[in-house]
Image (tube, rainbow, N blue to C red; front, side):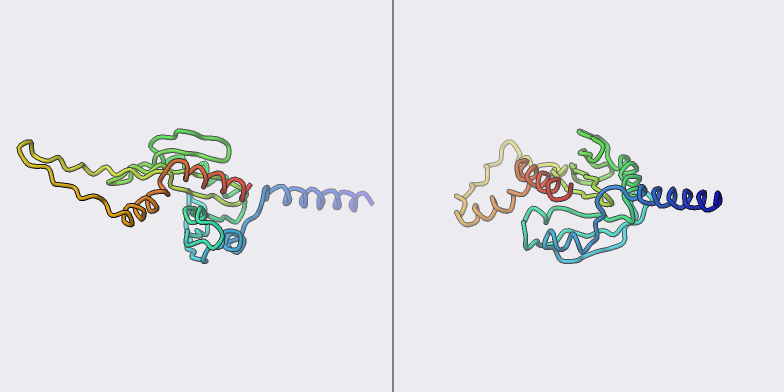
Amino acid sequence: MKIKANLILILCSVMLMGCGMQQGKVYTTEDIVETCGLNERTRDFNMGGYDSVNLMSSKSTVDKHFEFMDFYIFESSHAAKKAFKRTESWYREIEEEGDDYRKGWLAGVCDADIEQYEYLTGNMIILVDMQCVSTWGEYVPEEDSEPDPQPDPDPESLKAYEEATKCWTMSYREEIIELMRETFN
């Protein structure tokens, strides 16, 4: 009888430990495709020594804001958390950081400065580029040269330009972060 009780106790302990290993929401690529209305474009990706499936952003049928998110789905929340800790080295400067997010400037990027937001939720890490600033020099005309006359912009071209650059405004990026955190909490 004592052996049975010990065996049951051991089995219960093992089951409870197994349940504790996977904490938080468990996401699949199918969940993300359905929730965000994206095409399923995936690749295998090793992040910080942990294997994941990267669901790359594509046109969304639900909300254009989802098009700026890259999803990295891990086998477990434990693996995602470990990978998240190791991605700290990706940044040359971290502006903000918490238990489940990080915002900073990426290290080792040529010809640009890229500010990225990284969000950990369950078994997934989501990356969003917040800003991209070119580091190419600007053209400076010679002192004695005549400035090029600038034609008045075509209203349609101006409207298209404003729409294309809207995605890089800080308010638009904050909307993306808010939607991401509300959708995947």
